[in-house]
Image (cartoon, rainbow, N blue to C red):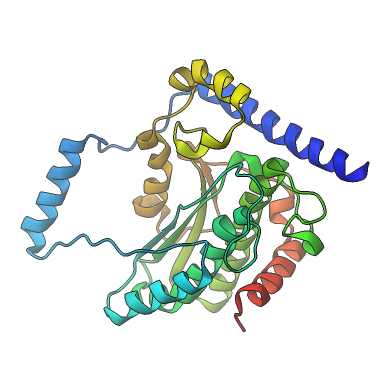
Length: 288
């Protein structure tokens, strides 16, 4: 009976958070950057970079965050290029997928949304530190979600084996990202490293993330999506702001929503839980 109640509560918390976000988005304009998001403006920006630096280059490198081996291989390839790293945006994720395991045996939401980013960030941290300097810090941006408010973290059942709930697993992964972000920023400040890390909530964005909703939920979503959901470009604005805004230079440990500093849940600020999750995560991904 207890496992059923746990699953139901996770479901209810997630959808209540969703309703709260939709109500906010109904009565508040989406945060937008001064620069536009149109394709023509993007092409013009690329052309300007190429003209000014005469060596601008964009390159795609494959990375599967659901595979710790893929993460390590990606980092090895990146470091072999000898390039600096000034901005790392941890943006990949899945939502509400049926119970599945990664190739490493982790529950998919926890493994891809959280552990993959945890390992990637830690393995690239030395490059980020070398690339940053006082007055021009390297930046890490972590994509969280309002669903973290309803998230719960059970350290002895992070893989959801006792009671799997897609809603609870997604919320847990977004809470874990915040706990990780705040703990890492504290470590960086103590050591005096020129790296900042901020978390971002993009709001409810009309993307393929919602493809795993049940059929009734899909039907219920359609009338609201065009009216209340944000476009992918609008959803990306706060992440870009966190990665590039001059007013955020040297500032870390924030939770940003709609371009503004917002208070995350009290649980996400629990330093004891942050420390415990960090230690468990290091063990799971094989970091010393």
